[in-house]
Amino acid sequence: MRGMRYSHLLKGFYIRPEVAFSAFSRDDSYSTNRDDIVGGAVLLNLGKQWVFDDAMGLDLFFGVGYGFDNWSITVDYPYYGDEPVYHYGWFNGTQEVPIAFTAGLRIGFLMK
Image (spheres, rainbow, N blue to C red):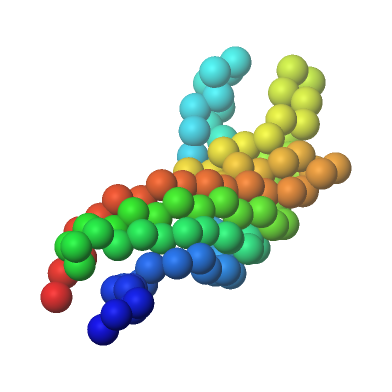
């Protein structure tokens, strides 16, 4: 029909709440210790998604929220200080500023 445009159901802006959890171990570069780090975050993501030819999707998003972990609480090494930790999905701030950030670009194929 004249004046109408095709729009896919998945196309457009969105707001997505997210609850994330992370647990991992890493080797201490200053000694022979192994550090166990556990963290979580509550994030609010804003994004835009495009769909091309009902076959390919492109998603761009950014999120901010509250993040926490046991790293900045239990660290007792004087050379670490209060450093932020990347949790393989979001970036935590410090104990004094517990803001968490996430961002991403997803490219995928739509399946029917």
